[in-house]
Image (cartoon, rainbow over all chains, first blue to last red):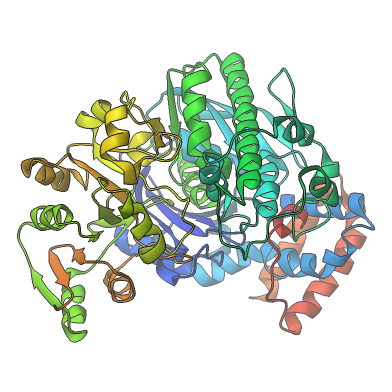
Length: 566
Length: 56
């Protein structure tokens, strides 16, 4: 029986996860506590918070595991440097800074800053950590596991076989051929920030038609056996750290989009939306090929997914529908943050600890302090009071058309707000989407919002059967005609929605039932409680800071109701 | 960080390349390492390009 801390850092989305006696005690992204979006620094705050949640200190840890091997990465770096020379020589100084300035000293840094002996610090493997995060938190005894991202040490895509809690590598595809880097290059060409804007490409794709399939297919070749190859003439990730795409890509698709220009996806930006649609479709086809191969190679009926590409909810829906698996699960923090959890779970297994219980929800962070919220709200001049019926007060506000900030329980693990740190509204008015996008969230007007509803009601409004993805918002489902008409703020332009289904003991269940009691359909718009370029709210101070700056009508922090004075 | 710890990291790094039969990288690594030390001593760089991880 052991206490194992997993850490990811030094790329983006640093995180810590603590596993004690095989069970997940806490899992926290550093950005939630540092308030720096995608904070990549060593997650010391998150690690300390995890330890505090367990009531232990660092001396009680049996092991600290870093999610990847920096020496393996350095080896790939040096190979790239040699192969690309003289191209890439301009990045030489950057290379020194990023690799040798901090990354290779990770064991020393962890030992010193976390406060453990150097002999307790271990190095994991990037894709093994991803695979472990998906398989061990899944509800499956046997499963195929696919990990797909930009690049780890060397691997970009890997197929694993999970059997009786043992995880073995079946085959892999190595750098420079990468679906994550394929999508990232087009993300950059569309004018979005790489490692941040990929999900915007997915949302934009719904506005376009895949009119550029032939051209996109030239950049990413798909083979009959499920493997893929990038045509590197169109990409620059082997020698240019800025863009990821080459001049050849601009000759094929035209000039990159100016990110400073406002978006008009149905007008001036139609072409960019069409390219996004073709890129999205090509990615889906590539992932379908990999998933079908995974099914054929392992013979399993269940599939687990992780790696940054597994955050593509639209592709996940196609995999679930078309790849031949009976069940599909996506680890909700599928990006690099999730590697911290996988590294800890993998090491705990190696120490003989039992496999953890399947992940039922993502409430693995910290609780906000209602008393702190009450005191701070009063000092800021807001009306604040403790209440008994939090769900009832929220439901009444939603029925009035209010936007409600909902801070309840431990905050979520991963990028999705799942009812612990959510911004809620009723989806009946299309104008609600505009209001949330432009005024509250300050983001692109084409970005969709997701609905949350009770699992027991989901099939009425969506083409839904119970599955392992909708509790975590890792897939999309088609809205039925009634839902398109009744919930326009929560259905995307293509008629799909990234639905969250809520179990009877879920954080949003009392609120959804309270809406039902008021003869209102138990469906809410559920979006993350943050503004543009900010991490999702963690504690009471963050919540009040957001409430003070944005037109939010009601803030509920645990049992504390906070309103502006009229 | 302690010098002993750093020395152990260098040892582990060399061992990694030895196991992978890539010891021919060591001269290049030495040059990089020297540059890194200089960067650390001079305050390093604050800007990190978005595709840097794919390259380095």
